[in-house]
Amino acid sequence: MSLESVTETIKQKMQNAHGLSARVKFDFGDEGLILADTTQSPATVSHEDGEADVTLKTSLDTFKAILAGTQDPNIAFMMGKLKIQGSMGLAMKLNGILED
Image 1: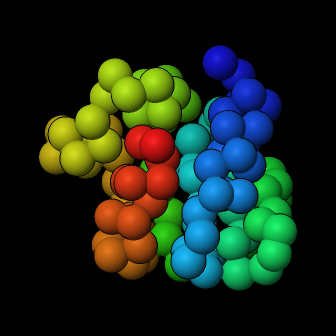
Image 2: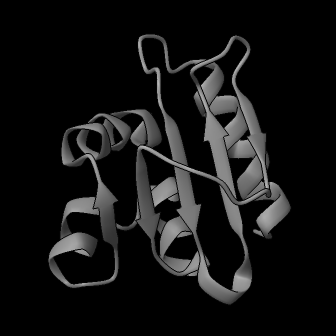
């Protein structure tokens, strides 16, 4: 799964993230980033850097595993594979959205 396919997956999941009104950044380091803005309808997803309410920092491989359901995001966080900057409450909401 490439950054482009992860971006498409994020687009689909954010379209169904009703009630989530936030800007979320997925930072994969040198592998790129994704910025999802659900404050507008329809949600926009891009590779542009910008302000975010919450930033999830991880490797692309770890994030792919979270999307596939083979890596629990809570375990990844506790092991240091996933770092969160910003709203922890928002990150917990994302947990449910990404696992669906």
